[in-house]
Length: 132
Image (cartoon, rainbow, N blue to C red; front, side, top):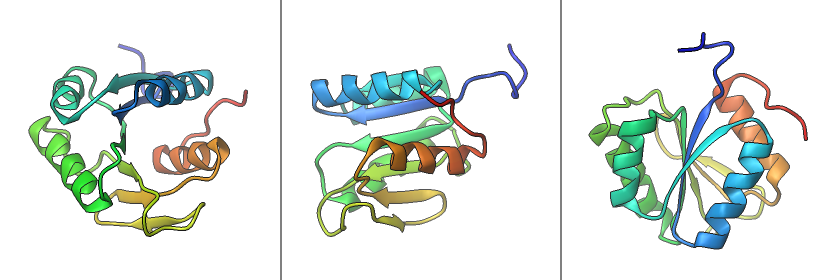
């Protein structure tokens, strides 16, 4: 296994719309992240155990409270612990570009562009992503 300084950060993307899931995966991979995707909570539980993500991104079109609960279940069921940040994409109740802490290392956000998401990930992972 590569030393932590050389290992690419692993992002687990949980998105129910295939085209969106693929787009997020491509953008994150182009920024130097290792990406694993899931279409629902059930699949994400399996993937989280396999890939041990550094960050979990959730965009399921649900109210953010339900998505936050899913993120907590994934962390607990996969024995990831609370150190793995969970980022929930939400458009209801937030202005574009807004970010709201929702518990220990849990964030609800409505990014208005990919640079904002990349900046959030960089901050959460404390290492800069590669530029395009």
